Image (tube, rainbow, N blue to C red):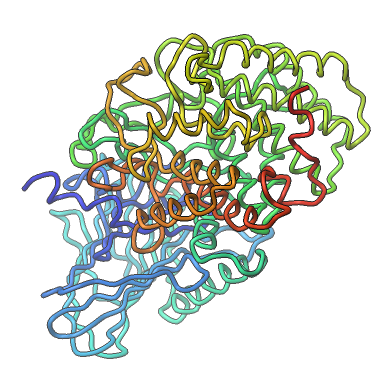
Amino acid sequence: MSDRARYAPISDYALIGDCHGSALVRRDGSIDWLCLTRFDSGGVFVRLLDDQRGGAFRISARDLIETRRRYLPDTNVLETTLVTRTGEARLTDCFAMRKGGRERPLRQLLRRIEGVRGRVELELEITPRYDYGDLHPWLRWHQKERVWSAVGGDDGIVVSSDAPLAIDREGCAFRCTLTLGPRQRRRFALTAAQPWALQLRRVSAREIDARIGRAARWWRAWVARAHDGLAPEVTRSALVLKLLTCAPTGAIVAAPTTSLPERPGGSRNWDYRLSWIRDSTMTLAALFSVGHPEAASAFQRFIRTATAGRVEELQIAYGCYGERRLPELEVTHLDGWRGSRPVRVGNAAAHQTQLDVYGELLQAAHLWVGLEKHPDEDEWRFLSDLVEAAARRWPEPDRGLWETRGEPRHFVYSKVMCWVALDCGLRIAERIGARCDRERWQSVRDQIRRSVEENGVDRERGCFVQAYGSRELDASLLRLPIVGFVPVDDPRMRATLEAVREDLAVGPLVRRYRSEQAGDGLPAGEGAFLMASFWLVDALAMAGRDDEAAELYRELLALGNDVGLYSEECDLETRELLGNFPQAFTHVALITAADQLRRLRSEHGAGRSLAERHHPAWPEMSSSLGT
């Protein structure tokens, strides 16, 4: 069987989770990815990355004709309908949700299969595989407690079910066959357990039903705190971003998966289960825009704690619990999705120099201060140290927004974000009445602007470029008016917009840069970046080209899967979703694009920056343009 036949398309999956761990459910009801205790664990099921070794929770319906699925409205509870020649069954999947506060997370996956009409014959198989599929666990039935367990190494699960599971020791699996008629149900609860201290408490069928209902109410209550009148795709994107937020720490992971390729069979396969400062700060702005400002305070605390309050300790990414050592390892025993190797765990980019992070963090702080928060003395010292670091380091080359693995370069976007760091630092100081070296900060800010204008513009085309000394384009340049560096109607920005569309766009899709010409230290070849494609919507809308922006937005929405999820990239020819899934960055960009379209249609919104329009207290970001 070919790799294509063995592995479902990335778009076939839907995400569930509890803000601690996550799972991906395939269109046919198979759970092919489950990190139950935390986003970056070694997994319970990793069939997504190896069809043979990875393990899964499969529910196979005999004589299956079609499947339909949806999220229950305003929730992350997934409902899949399996239609066979003899009947119909409904599968409900979610994680149990804790009430909050000091209550410990349950770390529990819930499944319920129910007959709807006729009779449906099902085969179930639960094949736990720990340590990225490398460890077959010890399976046991506990007669007294009437539960099953699967333990090995430092991993374990306890399975509660009213289905007649049997242990297949040769295949190292729990199996059963079922025939369900109307209103007949079977339920499953998979609870994370410590092998050396197994808690063999059975979760009853009634309790599983109650916890599914409680999870739906939890998510609806969270959505209800958002602004009214949000478009369905915006609400769904916000729900994805909440799923990717680590509840105990406030960290936000870039995606719940590792090593889904940017090109099938290629080597651009990365672990995205980390919290990038850049991704997280953009996520905060997006969540803030839809009515969830609490995320800003949580992430501020995470960063200060992860760095021990010392800017010199700052990394561009951390583990979701603040881990600093994130070695990049290759898991050689896994086949990879459709043979895309290597499969990587950890990400060496976490220790790169990426100077834009200073601007990203200070934008987030500016947002936080706009919520009428007042930094204490230690907090202001940390923020002012960030400004000082940007002022000192902006002349250095770096690896840039896209984490290139070639030689460091003088990326224009990195310089601009250092400018943003100085600009936001000055505005925060003014707003809270804090002392700072205002004259020097202003001088450095102006020096950065002159440097970009002298070295970051193609004199022949009149547009901004990716890096000093280059004529190549970069999609990140579309963000220059969004962050307040240049007005959208500046001739150089207008030229940049047209140059990006000419050089990097293929239909509605935008490449981040030309990988065959970028010298990024990796083999050429990748899809279009959906985030960058939504940035083009932003730029067009800010430029007053609302009809073009709206049409492009509609085309991009059509690229999501049937439940409204988007990956990192999209194949330029087939429009197949590629890369880690779902990708926070893409859903952030969707929210901001939707906001631009909604706001910029009004006369007073035209040309204003995103964050400024979200909150009346946000100062005018473009007031210093041209100084």
